[in-house]
Length: 281
Length: 348
Image 1: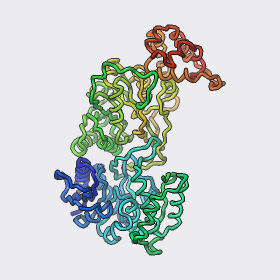
Image 2 (image 1 turned 180 degrees about the vertical axis):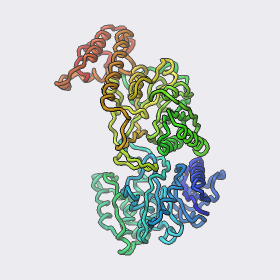
Image 3 (image 1 turned 90 degrees about the vertical axis):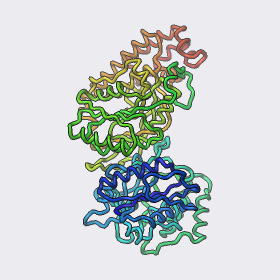
Image 4 (image 1 turned 135 degrees about the vertical axis):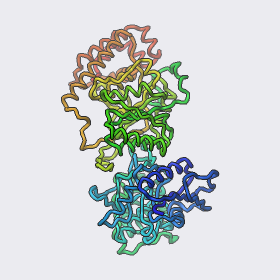
């Protein structure tokens, strides 16, 4: 098997999932690859109807979140390439071909290829000539199975969801490989805009991502970033916001966040991980 | 007028409101087939809509055979994989407006909206128009449009060079729009039955700004309802020209549009003795601005604008007409009756 599509569901509708599978299969077929689709369902109640287009539907009795769900799906994946995709993605016709070419370019050591999300991509730095970027979004990333396993997969303990993709990307880079942004490989990801023109984020998403950011910074030995984020949380609201900070301290105290060794930590860069001008609430 | 606010000049629902109980939306996508990747992105945007469009009219304008074949393949993919209802229409000749007029003729939805083959829309672009049409079925529905500078590569790559900017006015003003267009073609949808009843068409003699001219006409006749959500993004490739036309042509064509639109407006005001629907909000705003210190000293009214003001003053002397057109007791009603002279100072 050449490529496995892996997606993790939590209450996403079946139509979205089937649309993802259909667009992926077409794209993989266009690339001349054999393909399979795997979904791990974290929703408390499993789908009542069979999901069209998926070889494997794995319902988890407990919520494994994105990291645990993706790792579980990888256990059942037969592809030498793994494409992690959000359940509401719709792939362009040549997305798979271009991602595979991106990761298998001769003369370069690419560990991960990330595609572009339309209409609103995740803002982050990358080299326009080579596509080299410090991290890849787990919403649309291709990685070789061997690299995924060798680099330790997603860290479900430290980062169950949010920032788990950044963490994996940095471990891939620490292993000597690079991350490539392939803007010609695009997929629809239905983000909305606020009335101010920024990408909309629900309060839950915001809280969870900020908490994850603190855990990420702690794991990668960037206590300066931890301090800065905490002070931003206090400064912007005019009064202390403890929810994210409490959650972070709790996770550290419970030993859920394991720090990397100092030599590994050198690859971490928080440019683009804390978007400029983002308000932390 | 915003969808979720009340205005003293709120348009009374027309009996035609009963025509579209569940408004369907046709989307016209104009392409020459020379940007296949960006066209594919547009189709993906349409596939991701939370309210599916009734149909996607893929208007292949002056496309060469190879490009036409590629457009057809993309339409097949959109039907088979994305589940869209795509209708390819070959438009072999005519100016920029020709494919848009074809769409006006063949669209079967309650509403028609437009996409060029290099813009992006958010998931609720179609539903925003549909919801607006439900409440205001005879008006043009306008969404908020952002602008983003992008760079594109030959292999279909694209990245943002700027964040999404919001340079356009949130509220539609006809008098501001005749100075400069503030609504890209992706930013409005038209009620098809009304447009057809009024026999409104895009002017195919215009080499550019055909959408601006059409919007001025439709908005004047039908009025405009603004929606607050930012649902469309106009991607500007910083390294590509807007069109192949030189700057002098732009100025000339724009001046011609302004002259014609003012002439049409004057005729309607003086002959029909009614404030056109699309101007009523402007009139209300003008009359609210009645303090002399808000007038800029160096402003000069153009001759056409003065004519319009004289027409408005003449109109305002017809009390019975005022009472019919404007709700009695409203600020506009009072102002038109009592302070017509104030109209002369505030149109720039």
